[in-house]
Image 1: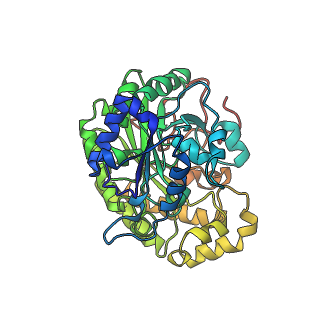
Image 2: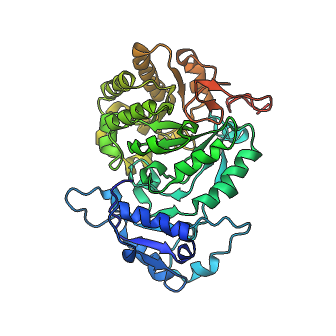
Image 3: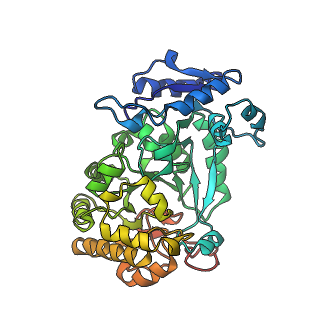
Length: 437
């Protein structure tokens, strides 16, 4: 796992009652050079003090020379509450400092979102977004990468680590697989977590692969910005895993993803995974139009296609933000002035539009450049735009070469290994189509 340097480490008291969870935590502590004695135990008695202290560590007042700022985020080890009816945390919240969010206690006490149907047809129709319905899974909240475009990276006060993974596989992953036969590939991705950054000590993906192997024709995506992949060589049933990389150009990785792998390191990680027999897919998302973005993205596309053979390449602009949010969270001096001006001038028109802050014409210009750069080097790799509007698909479908109603992307529920779609009579279309039938 990453060489994290958390400002402080906490453990919910109930972790002590499960020897398997305790052993998992000890493995992870050993990997970052911390002793179990350094962990602060959270009980109902000291909860208010622990919550107040947690709020004080991020952002850090100072970063030691050579340290990675985002690696200093505190860790909270917990167990995911998988009970049928979770206890009400409101009484505990009343005892906490004024302004404490219920979400803080939910994470400490393991009230995680355990599985969610992402991008159902009706939802995407309402938001004018094209994707595939897919079940997302997750066992952690937060990420060490500290990406400045990501709310969890900028503002997350701590990373909450669920430890009862064996129970999660039996009570969540197995039942979800059985209940949703149309879903062939499941994403391990929830709550802003890049889960492979904690491997192999965490052990999630080994358990995930073993569980998937119990079912014929089921696979799982890991979705990452990381280059931490060497451990995958020792994972049984790794053929059930599919690697999806959020890939950046050099400038974007350097300036906006401070704790992630560099652009070149991620491509090398993809190459290593391909050698292990793990299919890889590239998703340039979010595409941020940095200064000199045409040359920047042409360079990384060239490197990617010289070093790897991805099953698909997707493009998704920096979106889901207003112009004001972008101006507050990104250094606009690092962006292409033309793109910034266009976003500023269309700020009112783009309010409430999920593909904002950049207007349609700017996004289309950038996508067309990326498509051309890929096609100069590879005529056959499957291309798509990710969570984009129907209008964008209408404009680009001929250049992309895929039908937006039924296309192969990077991490959908039916994009099985081998550049194939595993469709069924009851599940034939992406959310571009007005109904699931």
